[in-house]
View 1 (spheres, rainbow, N blue to C red):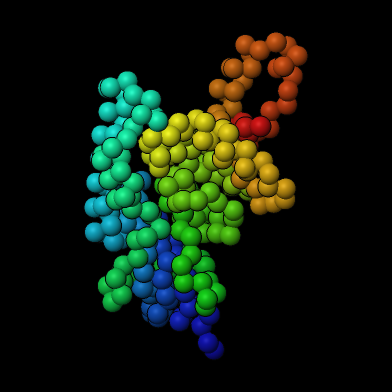
View 2: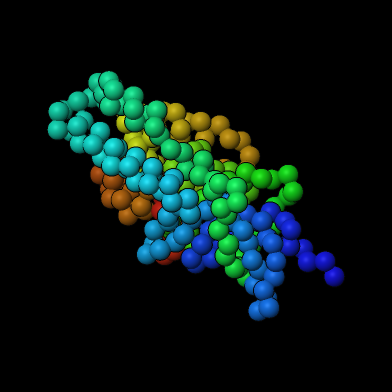
Length: 246
């Protein structure tokens, strides 16, 4: 009987490795050998790219971002005042998380259980991986096919998902937006562009934004009684309660 996995492209997710590749064989213990083309090692709640050269670029990028952020605050600059070679070089050298394929012939091989893999169509050779340390290995497979914000730098802002929606933490999204565009006001970009655009999605799957429920209730206590009667939609993930941003 032909094995459904062997020879097919898969996304594989364990507690230690997550990535995209081709299932090449089956081990005597029933696990499968997957040659990973793009993916991450998961160590101490951190995701590190399997492409070591690309991981170095990401780490350098993080340091450059910290330098830019410190310059904004230390010199009292407005976001729109940030210009010149330093910001130009930051954008020119930006390394997208989705451009991290290993060189052909240098794929890395790992073993996965059957329940740790999802088969992809033969034409799917560039799937969207989820850069998120908060999701479990099983959740990283379950979220496949959901509507997501691009680029993947927003993935770590996901707090959970259900059948119809993916939920992003608002404050984390604002921080990620600043990381992607240090010389733009992230609050304006998120509230007036991103959230507004997501409101136009008229049927599932949806994208929604959330804040900690207790923080929202505390703010509402300061409102007039009439305003405080506004219904707050709650969702819960991993024992954390969130309020959906309207």
